[in-house]
Image (cartoon, rainbow, N blue to C red; front, side, top):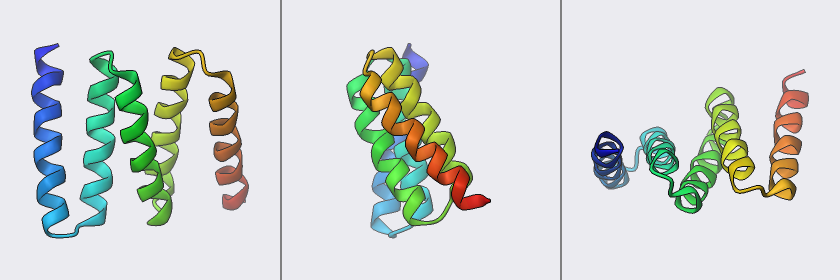
Length: 102
């Protein structure tokens, strides 16, 4: 657990630095990393917020692989929260992404 706490601190530091230099890719990656740490620490609601922001950033930047990875992490969080409607929403987003690549 301490490793995830320390990782979360580092991701938050990276996020602040990335915002200062307006690096969109690093911002998205740090949101994703922080979200994954929160999830591993059992802070699933915080994880969902961070992962949604990361997904939005990746989608906006057309970073499809990272967007898909983040959607799958969100889906796992929602499954853990037993939020089936949110899981279906994420499934729809994943399907739309797949269709856009065809």
